[in-house]
Length: 329
Image (cartoon, rainbow, N blue to C red; front, side, top):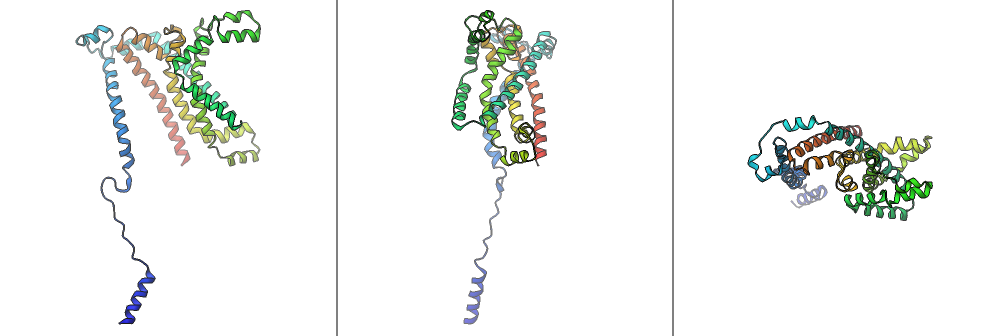
């Protein structure tokens, strides 16, 4: 009996402790697969609460004739007119001029801001640390300045009487005509030069910081391998750097399009709260033609058309992002 007992003890010691059977979790949160959705649910509820009613009200106004202050004071006078509001706006030649101007202006802003930001980010990648920190600090101050203030500052810089830009141009060229050159006399110059300058100035900090962060994620091994294969700096940039940072380029370009297409405050400040027809992009046109004269149904129609145009661009952006994700798998 003792021998049997000893053998049993020895055998159990050799086998080690008996395996502990893991308890199976049951219920909705089994495996934790629904936890992310649960954590996102409060944010989704808040967004729906903030967005649903305004969007409903926007579409509701678009199909009514609420185009006078009296209708807001006496809402019983408002009536539904169907698609007549859309027909009115879509058959307005001025509206299509504004749309084309907005597209051209947005294209200029997105291209120039992305190119300039990339050049600055590449430069910051090569300077010393203290220079980089100084530039980033200044850019954060620029980013913190409100758009209306930027517009006022640039209106003073480009003023025809005592403007800094005119005086600097006179010092460089010696031409007396630069002393009182009016940058805003021609809307083409005022919008596509001065207006573009103030919008790009405000957009650079975000884009530069983002692009610099993206550039730091490019593996140095890939750049060294490209140089060993005989690629020069430009070839390595287009064939190594750009493919690595392409997702961020797509995101930043899409955000720039959204911001620039509906730009308002900078142009509003540049033209002293009364932008002329040649300066009107979709944002200022919506304000001057819809909000100022209390034509709220017209403003709603213009807003819906603007949203649809931005959604069309975002669909293209999302398709490109899905292609990038599919290629990386």
